[in-house]
Image (cartoon, rainbow over all chains, first blue to last red; front, top):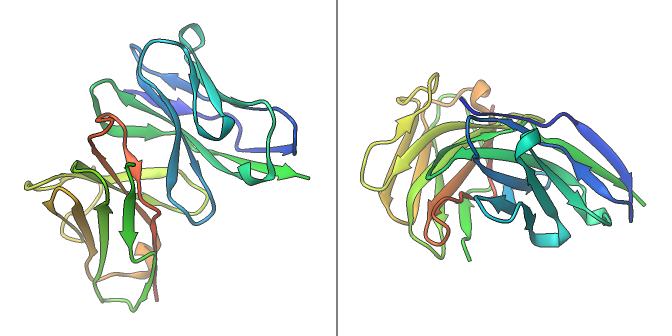
Length: 114
Length: 116
């Protein structure tokens, strides 16, 4: 069965600094991969997704993620963080052609200092 | 596009009463809708999957008689928490999947339920 690990529970960065949130997955083949962001008391917003093709995926709000098969990773990056990026970030995996069961990581809480 | 709404956003009820939460896909037809539960500072746990016009499929450990799910149309699914108790207090989030982007789930803003 597939699983997702987000090793960092909490990350703090200064505004304007670069950001990388880690996500590792376990699956026998290439899964569908997603990053979602959740602001306090809100639902989840899709940042980006990877199904196939170019391993560097561009998303909304200046985020990007890179799929690395050899490392079973799908890390989220942003070159310059804004205070409004403070939120909870979830990585999720799904079985190709059957995303009925998205498996979510435990999330990484991002705090941004001015 | 791909907007999902939930109503109400917040509800407080007395123990023993039932609460209905609506999930609507506003600009696309959702053949499948999902209901998740999220405890504070934790990840989302899938409760059930519902397909329009058929019975919901519940995850292991989720009481189907307590969490009634109806998916009567391609744009509406409802979750009814029957005889709610304080331990049912949680954040309930729905998601919907359909065109566009069939493999992507789009999430609603969530409903916070507090049972007194």
